[in-house]
Image 1 (cartoon, helix red, strand yellow):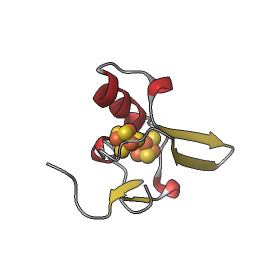
Image 2 (cartoon, rainbow, N blue to C red; image 1 turned 180 degrees about the vertical axis):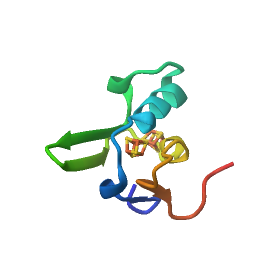
Image 3 (tube, rainbow, N blue to C red; image 1 turned 90 degrees about the vertical axis):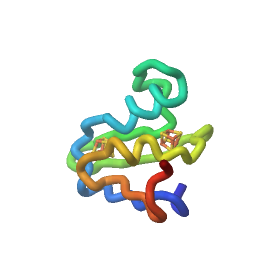
Image 4 (cartoon, protein in one colour; image 1 turned 135 degrees about the vertical axis):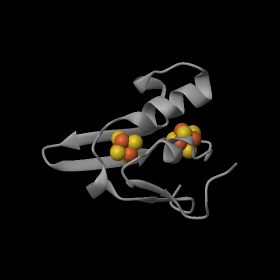
Length: 77
Ligand code: SF4
Ligand code: SF4
């Protein structure tokens, strides 16, 4: 996903909107565990990982309101 998305973990609030958006887009329901993007916080450090199975649809990016996920080439329509 590095070719499609700029990731800025320092801006992430761990709101988990991206995880919910991913599951809804791909399964039709909200489930943090079904998401193909995984956000976690350990102490003050946030990590954002794209998991195997990610389709590159960028739905997660659309719903990140904090600038932690940014499209490199614009969002798909
Ligand atoms: S790009 Fe699409 S499939 Fe991949 S994590 Fe984001 S919403 Fe999920
Ligand atoms: S939507 Fe953005 S700010 Fe919220 S958890 Fe995901 S990456 Fe972090």
